[in-house]
Image (cartoon, rainbow, N blue to C red; front, side):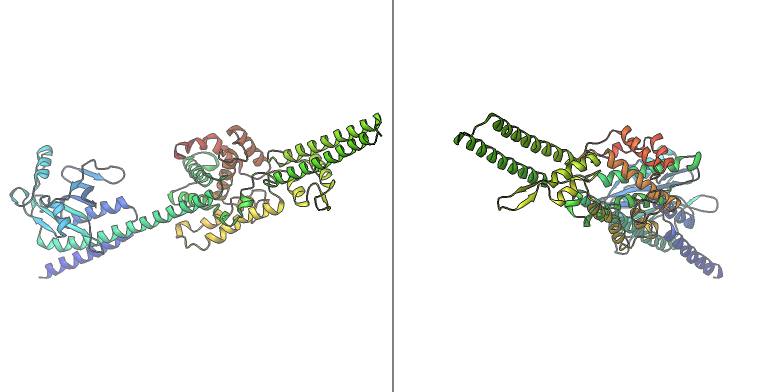
Length: 513
C-alpha cells in the first residue's frame, strides 16, 4: 500500500514538475519534443508521435523511436510524411474526432481500426508495434488541437507490454497541460504576428500619404535587419564582440518600421513639397505675363502716338524699341531665374539669392491700381532656400516628426523585448558630432541601433527611385555622399565600411518585390 501511495505521489510530483517545465519553455519545437519525451519517460514507452490538427488533417510534428534510434521533427529535422486525414477508422483521427483516449494492448489483434500504416512500417523497418496509447490534446475551449500517440510500453527488460490503465489519467493530465502550453504559445505568437502586421500596416499608411515615400520604411527595415546580420556574423575587428541575436534584431527592425510614424502629423504641404514654391510658380509666371502685357500695351501706345502726331524721330523710335527689347529680356531673364531657383536640384548660392532679391525689389501696378512687388516676401524666402525645398520654418515642422514618433510610441505598451523601440525610432536623425536632432546626442551616447538607422535612412533617401522631385542617385555616388557625412562627423565610419564591404543593399534586393 505504501509503495502504491509513493508511486501516486511521485507521479503527481512528476506531472507538476513537467507542467512547470512546459509552461517555461519558449521554443515551440523544443516544447513539442518535451511533450513526447516526458510522456515516453513516464510510461516507459519505446516510441511516440505527436500530431497537431490542421483543419481536416493531423500533421506529424514529432516522432521518436528508441529502438530504431529515430528522432524526427522540429526545425532541424522536419518530417516528410503526408498528413493523416480525419477518418474514424484511423485511431489517431478517431481520438481527435471523438475527443476520447484509446488504449490498445496489441495492435495486431485489435479490431475496429485500420492499422495498415503501422503494419507496413513494421514490415519495412523490422519493428514490431504492439501496444498503443492514444490521447487527445484538448485546449481550454474544449477543442482538440492535437493527438499524442505512445507506442510499446516496456517492462524492465525492454520487452513490449500493454499500457497500464493508470497511465491513461496521468498522460491525459500531461496532455492537458501540454495543450494549454501549446495554446498559450500559439496565442502569444498570434498576438505578436498581429502586432507586427499592424505595425507594417501603419508604416504603409504613413508611406502612402506621400507619393515620394512609397517604400521607404520597408527598405529601411530590410537594410537595418541585413546590416545587423552582417555585424552578428563578423568575427574580427571592432565588430567581433558585437552580437545581434533574434531579440535584438527584432527590436532594431521594429524600430525601423516605426521610425517615421510621426509623419502622420506632418502637413502634406510640407511633406509633399517637391519644389521650392511648387504651385506658386504658375502664379508668378502669370504675374510676369501680366507685367509683360502691360509693358507691351504701353509700348504700342507710345509707338502709335509717335506715328499719329507726326513726332516720329528716328532716335526716339530706336530708343522706344531698345527699351521694349530690354523689358522683354528682363522678363525672360527673371522667368528663367525663378524657374531655375525653384528646381530642388539647384544650389541657390549667394549670387542667385542676390539676383532674386533684385527681382523682388521691382514693382508693378496691378489691375486695381495698387503697387505690388514682382515677388512677395514669402515667395522670395522660399526661392532663396539654399539646399532642398524647405524653408527653416518648414524644416522645423518636418523635424518635429521625430518627437511625434517618440510621443506616439511611448503610449504603446511594448513588451520587455521591444522596450527600447520608442527610443531607437526617435534617434534616427542624431549625428555623432552632436548636431543632429531632436536630442543632440553625441558619440557613444548614440547606441549602435541609432547609428544603423541613421545610415540606412540616409542611404535609402539617396538611392530611392520613387521620388518624382529627384532622380535616384547611383550607388557609388550615394556611397561617396555617405563618406562625406562620415568625414563631417555625422555617420559611423566603421559601420559604413562594413555596409560597403558586404554590399548590404544587394542582400535585400529579392525582398523588395
